[in-house]
Image 1 (cartoon, rainbow, N blue to C red):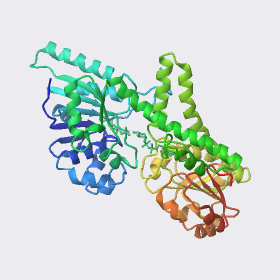
Image 2: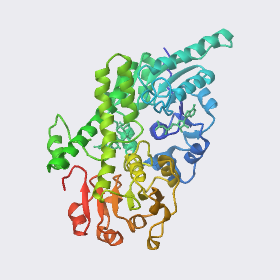
Image 3: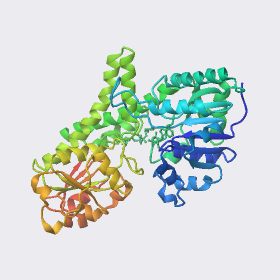
Image 4: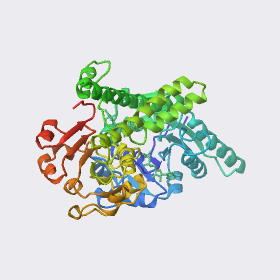
Length: 483
Ligand code: UDX
Ligand code: ADP
């Protein structure tokens, strides 16, 4: 049993999970050297930018945490092999997107990056190395990682170059939510460590114990840990699809979804959190993890269970198409050539991440209908929006000059709006798709004066005050409100 304390950590993958998680570990454990490595040179350069407002991940409080430890015991580098060779513990925190082709396409996770990492660890590790799965992985991935590591152990022993490296594999899923990552990492509800090697589990628990109370560190077997991550996300996503299904019913009946959520959420068995109706869930985890669960259920001959979870994803997609089509309906059945202002493109507030953002599908549907979209987001770049919409930006039209050629031909176009005034000028409608705090305090009478009337506000995030909107002379649709 190897019980030496951990002195050096390597994290492969400097993304939304690896970056903030390692920054907090380095901050809380100054005696541990933490190296975060990535193949993406631009990303590493951004993590090393002297200007902390240029970090590649936007997350409130992250700049301060990185500022305290970078250059002390936190390093960002592209030298993956060297970082592995000098580490007692290697975290695998690389992307695991849903497969787009081959067996399990559309549901199973694409593990090629995880597998590449395992092979690289097998090749470069020295001595005893604890390998920690941090990326969300389908159940039993640890088995594949272990098989790759063990094969290399045997090969090295065959070559007889001194003691071969040895490995322990742990699963330590990340439960942080983007936008609140630093608070979630500093005060987690729980830390979950799954594994078979008690010494390795205690070595990792020893790191978290520097700031997490002992009773919040849960130890399980590998498979329970992997499955807990998938099912935690499936349960959370299910709450959102449930409340969004109720929102549609509220709109049809005259009930108000915010009142219903409050009423049911005060039942302690249900609880008040995660009952906010909106344009559906986005982000890198929910859809991917549920589809993973669906794939597993099919694999284990449980089609009814698969169908049950799949419906959570279907309802989410439906909610997004529903919002786009009701916008078209309210604007006299056509948005062709009309200017619409989209406020918010990120999948939630306080992040620059747009993976699976509801805005992508809603804007996509409206572009298909020929709309002219002015898109504003405080943290998402125009290049990112162009990639997500699969459409380059057009230049902003001159509001005085009348319709553009694209508008007259019914072709959908979009442009990035530098500020809210530019976004709403000449617009027939404003759609609020992300709950950025700045959208809660807008000057609606000033905005109404810039719009073309009759003008609408579509609030998919319940951030506006209905009375203010109406007194500004604007029509309002709010999610889950018969209006
Ligand atoms: C989620 C899990 O919360 C986290 O534990 C896991 O580690 C990763 O996946 P994340 O996707 O970053 O985190 O954000 P989260 O706050 O869970 O929001 C996910 C989506 O659900 C967002 O699009 C958000 O706007 C939406 N949402 C959330 C709602 O529509 N209503 C709610 O009440 C809560
Ligand atoms: P997450 O939200 O899970 O953190 P990201 O996509 O933001 O996902 O980050 C994953 C990172 O892992 C990317 O920056 C990618 O370049 C990096 N990565 C993927 N495969 C490897 C690898 N074999 N070696 C080093 N970095 C890798």
